[in-house]
Length: 199
Image (cartoon, rainbow, N blue to C red):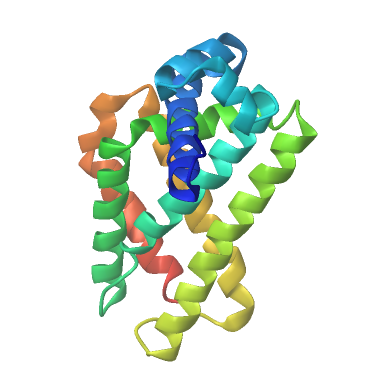
């Protein structure tokens, strides 16, 4: 019996989702192909049919999950003033951390793995560049609509700073979930965002 394109895509997405969960919780070194197959509810043979090895799965899981997270995070980049934008960014960031903690554990694991694997490193940089480009495009649009004022030559570096601070906060909260409601931290982050959006 042949498999349809939709069924194939569903299997691949199930494997990538399972990989994120397993790698987030067991780490790259501790995770096995069997663990990923079980978490994905597929046989080891099916997993090997779609992916070459664990490194291939990790790389493709990074590309897939990053794309989904970009789409989710960009919803927070809205508002009519820098303060309103900052509040929305923080609300969306809190929501992402609360609802998808495995993504940030996985991202941290992949960040560490990228120092040992050129293939993972290359994909990690591609994913970071996609996020930076998406934020930069949003900054451009917000400037065009006179919502914020950022000189053109500063937009890329500001996009980078926003990404790095956001990821840094998420990585910090992986092991310190009790800090999620730390109002001082979020207020300071809000001030940084407002300051960055008025350059």
